[in-house]
Image (cartoon, rainbow, N blue to C red; front, side, top):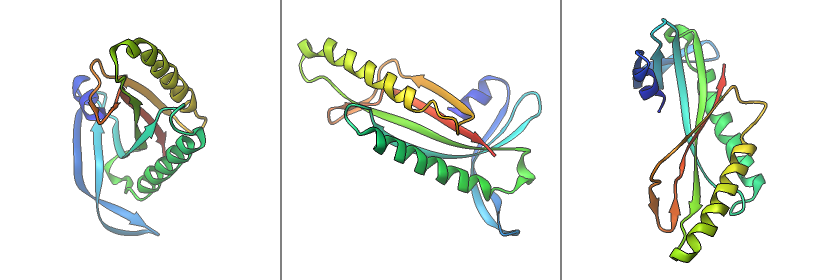
Length: 161
């Protein structure tokens, strides 16, 4: 999603590349998730994680918050070890993939779609957090599904280091 956005805007993006990491001033070989150069010349290194969450109403709010906190902390920790030589800006991001139940019967579809929309709205409200610098929601027109659940889009949460 981020690499494609950079390309669409005339930038450059390299995914999953070897890059030095640092820990207590010592350098060691590592890997970085994404490097972006914008067409205006700004460089960004991105450390990314993916969190699959149930939508509110099917999953407790505390569980969702806990999963988001854990994944953001994990991404921030990886970003903290990224050597600054590659870019002046380092971002820690989490791609949040909500799961919603797919209606089983046609007559239930409209009612369940309204419930799904309300649950997604609640999830989006939950992710409007003070500790997040970047927030974006990318819905899918035809959500992929498996085993009774659908993935209606991807939510990006990002923190600048």
